[in-house]
Image (cartoon, rainbow, N blue to C red; front, top):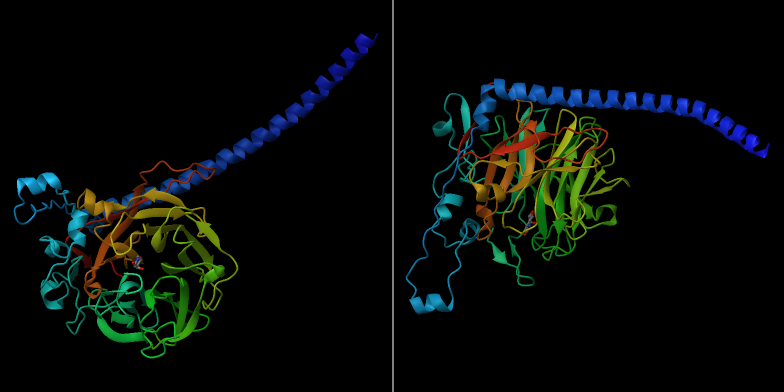
Length: 466
Ligand code: DGJ
C-alpha cells in the first residue's frame, strides 16, 4: 500500500513536472527564437553596413586610389670606417635596425625620415588637376613659407566661418635635455593655430594660448609641459573650448588643462588644470559626439590604462562618470572617430618620442566595452607598419565628401630637434572585415577593418567635397 502511494506520488510529480516542463520548453524556445531573431538582424545590419562600405570602397575611384600603397625597400648602409678584426672579435658590432637608424641623428638615412629642402606645401607647384598632394614626413610650410608648428594637434571645422582650424604645440625653440631628469624637451611656447579653406594651405593665425615667461608658479610657465591641445565648439555657450595635457618638466603633475575663447582663432583664456576623476592624466584627447556630448579620454595610472568619461554640458569640466579601458595594456596618444554609429580609436604604445606599433580599437558604446582590432597600418614595409610609419597618432579627421574615409594625423617626432618634427597625414578607411577573430557576445559584433595606407605622396581631391 505504502508502495502504491509512493508510486502515485511520483506519478503525480512526473505529471506536474511534465506540464512545467512543457511550459519551460515553450518559454525557452520563445527566448531562443527572439535571440536568433536579434542575432540575425544584428548580423544583417552589420553585414549591410559592411556591404555598403565595400560597395563604396570598390565603386569610388578615389577610395581605390587612397588604398594603393607605396612599398619601401630601404637598405641599411654598412657601418662607416673599418674596424680591425681583433676589435670585431672583442665586441662584434650589433646590426643596426631601421628604428636605430631613425633614432640616430648621425644616420646616413636621416634624409629618408626627415627630408631636407623638399617642401611639401607650395600651392602653385603641387596643385595638379585641382588636387592637393600631401607628402608625409616632408617640411610643411604655411602660406608665409614658414614651417608649420602644430605638433600633437587636431583639427576643428568651424561651421560658422566654414573654415578648418589646426591647433597644436608650437615647438619652435631649442631642444635640450632637462637637467633634472634627462628628458628631451622644448620649453612651452604656446598653442599654434592655422586656418584653411581646403585642408591643405594653412595660414598662421599666431599663438592662441601663450606660455608664461615670468610667473614660475603658473601651469603655463615655459619650464613646464603643454601637449596635445584639442579644440571643440560648444553650441550652447557659443565658446570654443580647448583641452590639453598640462605637466611639470618631470611629467609628475599629470593633469589636464582647459582654456576658452569666443572665436576659433583665439586668444584663449586659460581656466586652470585638474586631475580628472582624481586620477593622473597624461596623453589625452577630446571627442564630440553627434548628440553634442563631449568626452575626455586620457592615459592614466602611470600610463597603464586609458580613462574615458563625458564632459559637463559647457565642456569645462568632467562629470563623475568614468570608465577604465585597456587596463594593463599601456596605450597612449588616443585619437577617436565615429563611423556609422560605431566608435573607433587608434592608440600608440608608450615609448617616449620613439615610434611604436599603433592599434585600432572599436566599440558600440563610447564608454565601452572596447575591443582591439589590430594594427591598422598597411604598406611601406614591416618596420614601417610596426612603427606607425615612424610616427605617433594625434587626431583623426573625416574626409569631406567621402564617408568612411578619414585623415589619420600623426607626428613623426624628431627627438634631436623637436621643432623639426614632421607631420604624417595618411588616408584611413573603414571597410572590409577586421582581421582578428574577436570576442563573441550575443551582439555578434562584425567589426569593419580600420586601415591606414602608406603613401609617399597622396592627393586630397576636391571632387566629392560637400
Ligand atoms: C609620448 C607622448 O605621446 C608625447 O606626447 C610626449 O609626451 C612624449 N611621450 C614625451 O616623451
